[in-house]
Image 1 (cartoon, protein in one colour):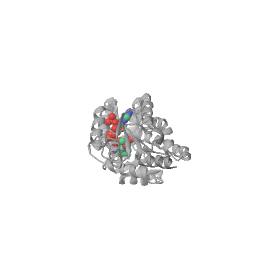
Image 2 (cartoon, rainbow, N blue to C red):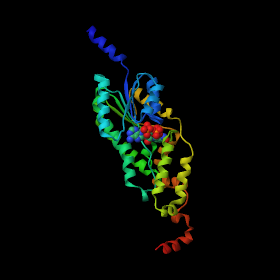
Image 3 (spheres, rainbow, N blue to C red):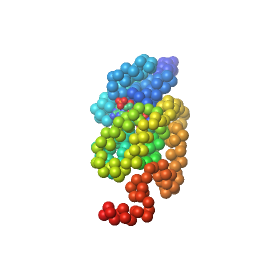
Image 4 (cartoon, helix red, strand yellow):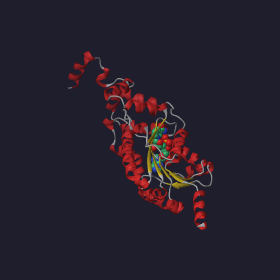
Length: 310
Ligand SMILES: NC(=O)c1ccc[n+]([C@@H]2O[C@H](COP(=O)([O-])OP(=O)(O)OC[C@H]3O[C@@H](n4cnc5c(N)ncnc54)[C@H](OP(=O)(O)O)[C@@H]3O)[C@@H](O)[C@H]2O)c1
């Protein structure tokens, strides 16, 4: 009996464990720093040695970095094996599927290969990473957090490839929440609005590459919209990533987490917008868009424009 309570005490003293994907920068890094400070044992996945070294220099010796490209099936398996060895019978208390990329552009000219990469990273990878860790999460009755987005419930021009990846992630999250509940595993969606991270700089680089692939006619047809995209990517924006990390810490700590958490006022606004009738919602979004296509031609001249085109 005495021996049993010693084992129980040791178990209680063992720090709780969490794996965070994409911890090199932005939201993932903020989560790693915060959960490390909170006394958890963090497994932080990164892709570069330099990112691993930087993170380790900023955290306690408890934090372990793991090299992981979430789209590489062998690396996902190897990560699950290494984490299983580290956590043993205690299992894993938290998984934060955070790694993600931006992806957008005009649907008329979207390269399917680019779209596949967004889906691979933002939708399929969170599924495969989770699958590989469910046995460890089951042992600890752990929690799975999906870093989704306001784009996971709201799709707008030029961003719909990214939205598609997050809408699909939401669908997986809803299904998983019910399938895993009988084991005491909670599955939660985190839906931030704009957050001030490197993703915007990467999105600008991605947009420049995408524009180069468009046929010249694309600029004639969609010029004002493309200009708006370029301008909006040049403006820095968003709240501090620690705001998301704080929400993540809450989700990992409360007795019964909610199914989804919005982060930031713009996410709350987008939720409100999406509850409006579609015609009104579209009108509000279109009022912020520049005029192009036949909409840019006065109504009286449109008939002539159509007949010239034919
Ligand atoms: N920033 C926002 O406004 C915002 C809003 C809503 C939701 N989100 C979501 O938040 C998550 C984190 O984004 P962030 O804003 O923090 O951007 P970020 O600073 O660019 O961080 C993205 C992280 O994902 C990693 N990553 C990308 N592809 C990967 C892959 N194939 N394998 C492993 N890691 C990979 C990156 O690693 P490398 O450094 O090696 O590339 C980086 O650590 C994403 O899922 C994003 O969709 C962001």
